[in-house]
Length: 133
Image 1: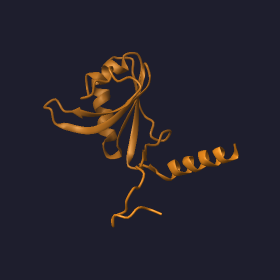
Image 2: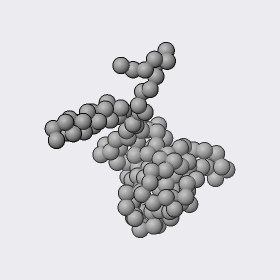
Image 3: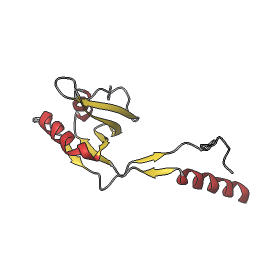
Image 4: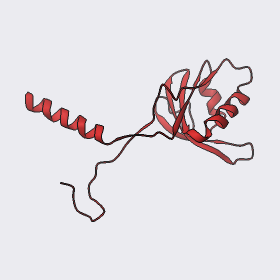
């Protein structure tokens, strides 16, 4: 029993050592009745089809130019988190607010309460081609 606990602990430590905070990312929260349909009409991803999954998406200008790439994660049926580069959060929020019109949606910057993380792959070989010790 103790050995299994140590093994679980070493696996958790291995995962934690591969987590990297992405400090150049920001997060918008889009919430309210119809938030999925709202995002569906503005981004390149089929938001309504991939419920619960984190999915890549791009937001486009009316002429089809990519404004920014994002990752969208559905929190519940009427709440989505939109992860984007911190340099475009202001323009993305303005775009969403401009298209919101009179829809009962909340669009907020929640970057202080959430942090984007990346899980790096297990190292199998170093630059010289040798296995790590």
